Amino acid sequence: MKKRIEALNKDYKKKSTSERLAQAHQDFERILITSSFGTTSALLFEQFRLAGLKNYTVQFVNTGFLFDETLRYKDTLSAHYEFNVTEIKPADWRFELTEKQQLWATNPDVCCAIKKIEPLEEVMKNYDLWISGIMAWQNDHRKNQEIFAVKHQLLKFHPLIDLQYSAAAQFYLENPQLRHPLQSLGYESIGCTHCTSLGIGREGRWSGVSGKTECGLHL
Image 1 (tube, rainbow, N blue to C red):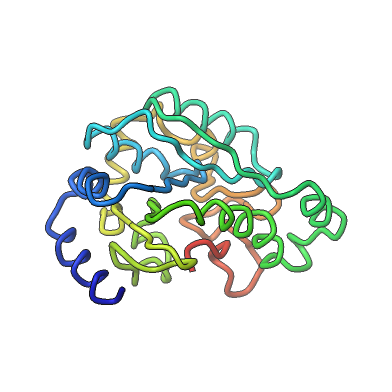
Image 2: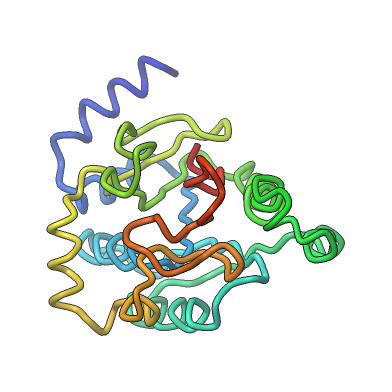
C-alpha cells in the first residue's frame, strides 16, 4: 500500500485539481464523496464541474445539531451543481445519548465520534476511495497532508489539498451566490451549533477546548 500511495501522489501531483478528479474516476470504481456543506464546500463541487462530472452522490453526515442555514446551503449547492445527496445519521438512541449527557460540552471527542465518525465508518465499508475537500491552509494538521493517504482503513483522496487560499477567496469573490449564508456574519468554519462560534479560519470551532481543531474524520 505504501508504494502504491507514493506512486499515486507522484502521478497526481502533476495534474490540476479537475484533472485529478477526472483521473480518479477512471482509476477507481467505488468512490465515496463527502461534504459537511461548510464555507469551502463549493470549491470541491466547482472542480467536479470543471472535470465534467455531475449526477454523482454526496454523503452528508447530519448530526442533528446543524444550522438551518447549512441545510439550506446543501440544497442550494446540490441544485446548482446537479448532484444527489444521501444523509447519514447516528442511530436514534446514540443521538439521544449525546443530548441527555450534553457530550458536546463534557466530552466533545466522544460526541464527534458518535455523531460523525461512527455513522460514516459504516458507509466507508462499501467504497475503495474517499474524496474529501480539505485544504492545507485550513489548519496545522491539514498542511501536512498529501494528495493520497490512508484514513479509517480507506484510501483517502484530497484533490484540493494544495489549492491556495488566494484562489479560494477569488472564487467566492466571483461567485458570491455560492457562499455559505453564515459566512457574511463572521463564521468562517461551520459545524454543529453547539461547537461553532464567530472566528477567523477554524478558531471558531470548539472554542475553549484545548487542542481540538478536528472532529476526527480527517485525523
